[in-house]
Length: 115
Length: 113
Image 1: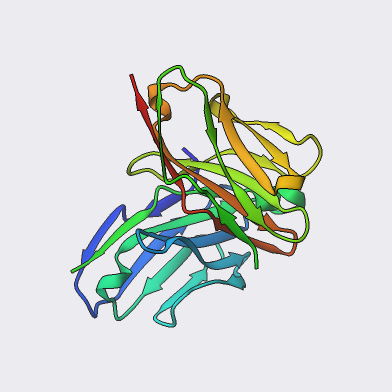
Image 2: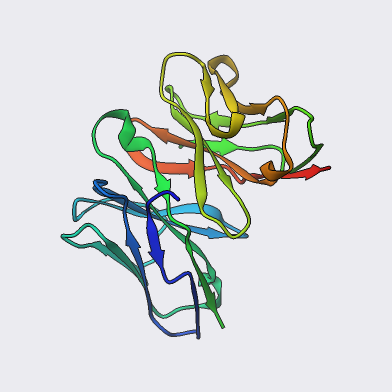
């Protein structure tokens, strides 16, 4: 158990809908990362937040957005869902300070199926 | 741009045999290197990491990896594989000025009894 929690574990929804994925980082970690894992794209970095502020952006679609709240939990919002958005979405967190900030600890993931 | 290559998509070994999973990276300076393992239906677990110093690093579950700058490689090894090691293994790289991890495509390890 990494200490990172994600809810829900599974999500099935229809095209055009909107969903919210939730992540709670390890205690004390200020950084939260979101990744998408799909068969054709592999593991892709989406976005990073640090202490409530967006720090880095990767291959995140405009239909997707995220935020990190004062209690440090994060939410990833996916809207106007398409079949191709079906994937496993991971949240990771890392401690701050020194090289340890590069060690990312992953949650169990949310499996999104768009029908 | 940084990239990570795992040339072996699928490897099969017998239980008790030795294992080496290959990883090559592309980056101008010394990167920070990681190996993660993903069991079916699970998240990614950090096996080991390299930041600097001793080029042979030890990780959890009896794994080790060696950083070879001249070959831009960070291969994962285990002297004797157990059936529970069957999983997908991902090599990843981070660089000094970015926090994001860039992952390889993964190597699926199958272990025969």
